[in-house]
Amino acid sequence: QQQVKQSPQSLIVQKGGISIINCAYENTAFDYFPWYQQFPGKGPALLIAIRPDVSEKKEGRFTISFNKSAKQFSLHIMDSQPGDSATYFCAPGTASKLTFGTGTRLQVTL
Amino acid sequence: DTGVSQDPRHKITKRGQNVTFRCDPISEHNRLYWYRQTLGQGPEFLTYFQNEAQLEKSRLLSDRFSAERPKGSFSTLEIQRTEQGDSAMYLCASSLFSIDEAFFGQGTRLTVV
Figure 1 (cartoon, each protein chain N blue to C red):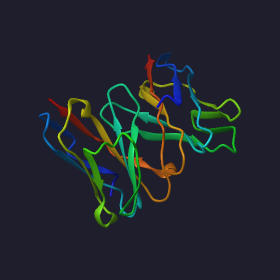
Figure 2 (figure 1 turned 60 degrees about the vertical axis):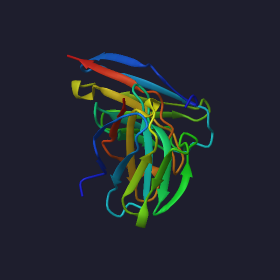
Figure 3 (figure 1 turned 120 degrees about the horizontal axis):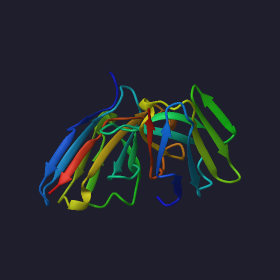
Figure 4 (figure 1 turned 90 degrees about the vertical axis):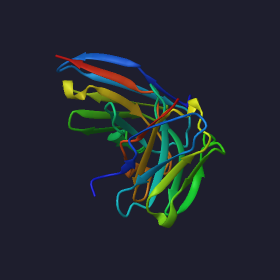
């Protein structure tokens, strides 16, 4: 599991602000780079994902940026809302297996 | 079919007992995955099936753990002689072709006392 490092561990952002979460990995065999969102008592849900042939992908308020040479990717949440308060996991992987980071607990305050 | 279904949602067992969890994937999904998530950590891969064939197993899956997927439909995960360290959320996911389409169930929370 140490091969995927996620930061920060926790994040407090005001409503309307930008939340940024980073993920660093070691395994160069990874070819799929997703972010998952998890609410208490629920399973993880795919939020947004990117393939290594693209450096950035935007879906609504969520943007994923990918830096292959640095082996890092990040999640940006624009106009953060209280409903975004959850734990976020990066989970780079291959076709059959994801390797999850340790998670970032995001709290969006009013 | 509204998603991946796991049963039971919660299980409390005494150390040394055997437990079995069930996962019903989304209909027609060929691939089924099991992950384990301990408190404050990200999920860890345990094993995955392509139809009824178990194609990969993690080193985390000790000889006390066994998973099956008879007829390529539902799957069961059995833990024999449970230990306190087995306390975790056991998550099941399914996909049609590859992990990038995977949907997770809500998990089975196991507490070993």
